[in-house]
Image 1: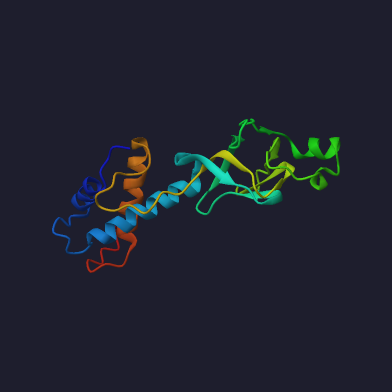
Image 2 (image 1 turned 30 degrees about the vertical axis):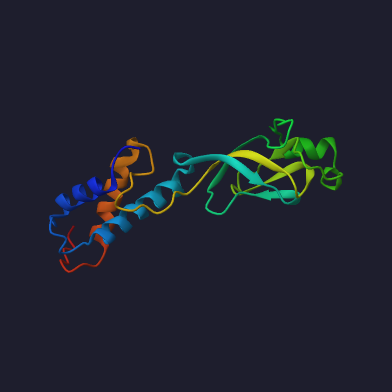
Length: 181
């Protein structure tokens, strides 16, 4: 993540043949780049990963924070003794003990089950008291970029972001009306 946003916008201007910002303002091109980042993260949630604490709610069903895109792993509880959390198959947990969702709630999590069809939620065992917190690794959404920022994704994604931003700029209805592009 070393490519400056203003450098990327200057590069876009060169290909758009708009060095004087007559057709596309900096704000327009910045929005094109932000849209490219959001589109990339939608397709590949693993390109922007956050590892940090997630407070838990009472019960078994838990959710990722707002802006998260996919759960990758639950690592450990944050309260001492920092017990590790393991992923188990829900079918195995159901087969072993069908009444596990009704167990006595605890603050620390032993296991979690994740359904690949629902990337934003998981279930914890035992049920949580609502006072627990775990360290998790999950796909996240970066803040919108400004001109003084660097691209939030690894440099290897710059060509894809560039092409997407260029296409978005051409797609927008502009003064130039060069619809062939």
